[in-house]
Length: 273
Image 1 (cartoon, one colour):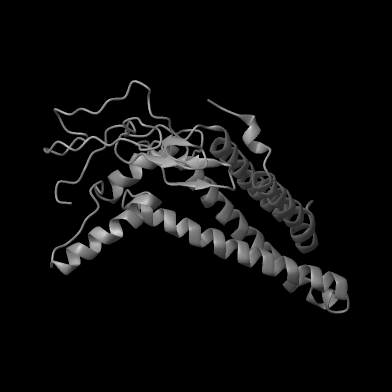
Image 2 (cartoon, rainbow, N blue to C red):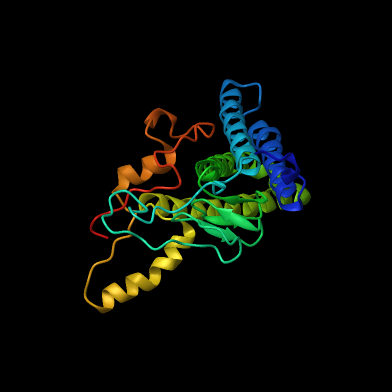
């Protein structure tokens, strides 16, 4: 189910506004003042940045519109078998104390959405939606492309300032504007880069944000008893990546290709966790 109404929230509209502002300033200030939009290098940089901006917009749209994952109404735990493949022990049925319904492994209740979300990572106010099984790849690629675009814009800003530093020196308003742009772009690049690094770590270990914080106690107990700890769904870096980005490497960076190797109900588990 998709709902365009999610776009009409202040955080989502703020994200779209910032994207538009950065796009306009990068093309019509940084590139134009550096080498000109009509030059070959100017056209190339404009094309690359426009492509990144389009990918960001597509990824954002998927994040906002796509349902992150709803527990099927017909779902019932397999009490005789196992709840995930790779495990030879039956697991205790999990029931949500708010929805009063059974929920699969890695499913959590979102207080904002007021329902359970499959493989929930977190609720993100900037997309006015939960980040879960069906839209996590789009969310990751949104952060990835936004980070690359911000770094690209920052590099163009630096090139522009170095070329025109003499003309900027005598123009206080313009100099103030460029300094403000520099502070904003560097801050945005660092923020998005940190978020990207965090989610690369989570994907490499096949964890969600919720599972990471839940596993801290298990890690502490394992270290206290002199044992090693491994997240139960950690299957190795490559398999962990394919479980999120898909099995086709060519389509890893395509936000519209969201087919996962897992079905959101049953998950492969590490035998030595």
